[in-house]
Each structure stands twice: as C-alpha cells, then as structure tokens.
Image (cartoon, rainbow, N blue to C red):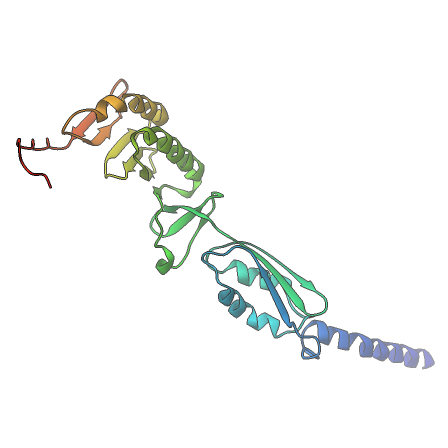
Length: 243
C-alpha cells in the first residue's frame, strides 16, 4: 500500500511540474506573460508588403513566445504570392525574426504562371501580372531548354536590335519564336539552334533589302529557309513634305 501511495504521489508531483510547462509551450496558459512583442522582417521586397506579412502572422503571434509554431509560421509565409524562401527564428525574450526572399520573375510561363530567374515556376494573382516580360509556352519539364533557347536567340538577334518576346516549344518538340516587331521564326524540331545560328549569319543581308521587311522566317528546311515579306513601301514622291 505504501508503495502504491508513493507511486501515486510521484505521478501527481510530476504532473504538477509537467502540465504547466506543456500549457505554456502549447499556448494554453500565460500567453500574456510571454507575448511576442517584436517582429523583425528582413528582405528586399517589390511585390510582398510588410502589411501582408504581419496580417498572415497575427493568428500565430497570439499563442505567445513559447508556443509560437515556427514550422506553421514558415508554411504560412511560404504560401504568400511572390515568396520564394522563408526563414523564421525566435530570439529571447519576445522577438520573432523573419527573412523572406522574393521570386524574381524572368518570364511569363503559359497563361497563368511566371518563371523565376532561378528556374522556378510560380503563380500570382491576376492583378499582379502587369510586367514587361517575354512569354514562354512549353511543358514544365522543358524549363531549362526554353531558357537556353531564349538566351541564344536574344544574343543572335541583338545585332539587329530586335528582342525575342515569345518562345514556344510544342508537345511534339517543335520550336518557334516571335520578335518584338511581330515577326515569327519557325525552327521546327530538328537541330533548331543550328538553323537559328545559320539564319542569324544571313540577317545583315536580309535586313538590307530596301523598302521591305520580313514578317515570317521558316527555317524548317535542311539547307535553307523561306521568308514572307511585307508589302513594298510606297516610294515618297520628290518634293513631298514628309512632316
């Protein structure tokens, strides 16, 4: 009987010690005695605001310093539009430190996503899509191939001061480009980069045709290409005032 009494006494004493600790750690007790009074936010923001971050954190901060669930805080912030990476930590006695890195958009991807400079696809609300970026259309598995194609095409057309505004890679592997002035380049599936480089070498001659500009270049030939031209510009009559 004495052994049972001693065991029961030990259990009760242990509970009296442990339960208050659990209550504090889980936010059941004394949250007002150890509140989170300071929130330190670090990061260079363009699309994410301090107000968004604070509003997202309010439900968690109410639990007090000890019960503050860092994993849930991190998940909540990571779910905000434009957020790429999150780091959170607590600093005694009353501070939550937050470091947030934004996605840096490099291009539109499809109809409803963006591609970051790190090659990550992400989504944002439609009202935040007013960006001057190229448009890429392809399957998500082809991110690196599309990025490489755009970079090479930009380099090749830079000599003509023409920007590549769209890259398409179909499910069957066919490539096409669109330039800033609306001109289209069809590359096909076979050796698209080699064909593009070959075409680029001819550009000085192609661009030199007076009164015409090419609207469409079809490079899907093994030993050449076909061009669709604009209508000839009407000659300016002698003595006509062009102002």
